[in-house]
Every structure is written in C-alpha cells, then in structure tokens.
Length: 193
Image (cartoon, rainbow, N blue to C red):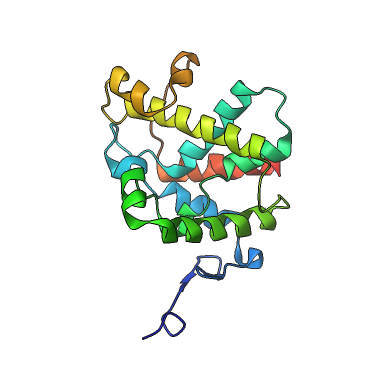
C-alpha cells in the first residue's frame, strides 16, 4: 500500500477532514484546535495534579510569558504564540526526545500543519525570525516552570535543560480540567483574533 492509498486525514468534530500530508487552511477550525489541545497532555501526562497539564493551558502560558518578555508585542504575534503548538491538536504532543528519534519527517509534517493553521488565521506561514525566536524562548521558559512545578524536575536540572528566565516571573501552574482549558483557550483566541 503506497502513502497515497493510505488514509492520511483526520475527521474533526466540526465535520472538517484535515489531510495531514497536505493540510488546507480551509479545514482548520479554532474549536477543533481548542478541543484537541485541551485533551492532549504535556509531559506524556507525567505531571502532578488531578488533571493532566494540557497543551491548551501550556499555549496560554507561552503567550503570557511572551508578553512578559516583550510587553509591546503586537496582537498578531501574541496570537502566533498562542497557536505555536496548534498542530498537536491532531498529532498529539510528542516529547522532545521522541521527536528526535522519529527524525526530520515528523518536523516537516508538524511544520506543514502549523503553516496551515497560521494561514487560516491571517498570519504569515513563516513567522519573522525575531518572533519565532521570542516564541521559542517563551516556550522553553514555560517548559522550565512546568518541569519544576509539575513534572518533578529539580530546579538545577531544569536550568540545564530549559530557559530559567521564567523562574522569577511569579507564575504558579496548576492543571485545569479539559473544559476549562478549552474555554480559556477559545476566549483568549477571540481576544487576539
């Protein structure tokens, strides 16, 4: 069976059919993204609390940190920060060591999905390098907070692996139930879009 004859699409609750190999911005809906991300666990679910720390909640934290790092960040780039992990609504959240093991094919798939999402919401498919770097810094800072507050990392170990600039931002993380994460993600999207 060739790749072309295998099913490479995912049916969404909105009724959309997202082709993973050739995603169209027309098949991307914010409710599908919020629903999926609110149910995808960061750290493979290996976090403290009654609920998994979802990618939806993580995305909100990343956007908040990006603004703390650059308070004058324009609304469109705040939206890009919120959507930075949007492809995970359909492919899940692979931990970084696993992504490295899978290889560059996974990164290419994830990039195509992100480009479709960004285009759907009137953002450029390729973000300016300074914006992408800021979002990456905020993402790594969020990972530091998650690692030390939720995933059992000692601060010393986390400082070696992640961006510890978030250590002094005063953000306290506590996992939300999926419905709250979904609602807050959609609300923040509406404020920024």
